[in-house]
Image (cartoon, rainbow, N blue to C red; front, side, top):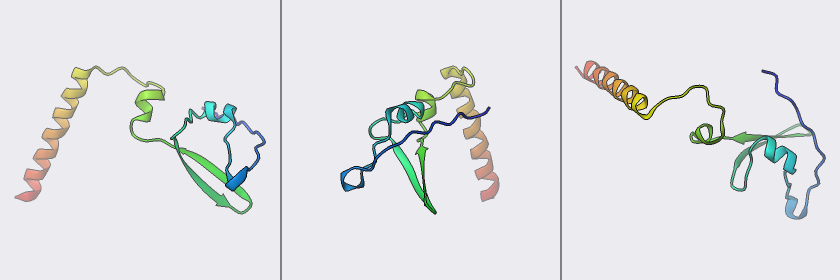
Length: 91
């Protein structure tokens, strides 16, 4: 998948505040309270959106449909495997 780029001009305000233009904020699903990483490299500023673990379930693309029952069954299997591993390493 090729990512399309979007470039806009912005101005630094009082107290060095940078307002992210609406078009970019919407493209990246950035809302008030969103977390970003800001990196300075030479004369460039890179702003990367940081997503928490919940973001994909709320706004991300859905890769598959999983029922609550399937999720619970997988969780139980993973826990059993973890307990077996812990029992084996503690012996």
